[in-house]
Length: 290
Image 1 (cartoon, rainbow, N blue to C red):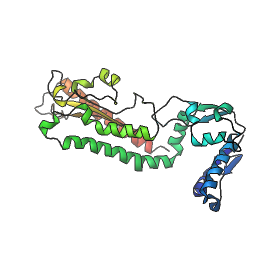
Image 2 (cartoon, rainbow, N blue to C red; image 1 turned 90 degrees about the vertical axis):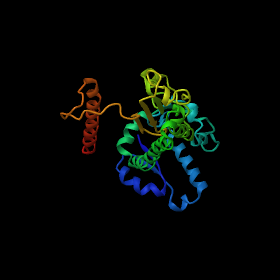
Image 3 (cartoon, helix red, strand yellow; image 1 turned 135 degrees about the vertical axis):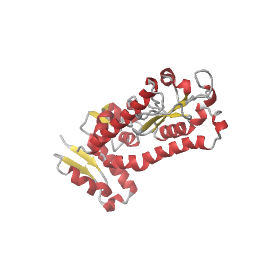
């Protein structure tokens, strides 16, 4: 039983304090001078990989991005550059990697570890992914800002939701994610077209051109609300919101006034306030827990 770790001279000093106490640890690392030769560095990476798996017959690999589970395909793993190099004569013995090793998916188990022990991924999530995610919402709102009140009525679900679809589709392509899970996809639905049945049958690749703000009320009139979701294609970020076109009623604030205190008008604001308070309390509890 042993642990093999490949690293380079740049991250060696950061990794060593964290892993130095591991039993039977073997580090694969070049010196700074050796690392300057790019060809030699790539060859060392391959030979280190071959050395790591030499006596292993069952291997688990990280396969999917968090939040985008893909069906495990060992032949896709066989196409990874470092795995293809395993089949080269004089390096890996000239055999296909999947013929010599039995592969399993370790994605879900590793996600649990990454969430606790990967500050670099957290930093990237906050400084890069979250910023890009936020820009999509700004682009989404710009579709409404540039339209006049009459033009907004002509907006279709396809046009209004275009920023979210482009962001999501481009991310899938650049990340080489081929499977499109229906559980995590961007959507935008107006008025009466936002029922549970519509959400379950929705496909972001075929947005509706016929459902407009002006014709998606229950009686064929102007929609009073829309349901929106933006989803990150390469990570766990997702946000769903319900927006209303104008005020359907003045919310009851718990004070004695002239508002009509109908039960149906009180329930939704009260539920919303309770949910917000619960989320804020959960966040406070999480950040205060070691």
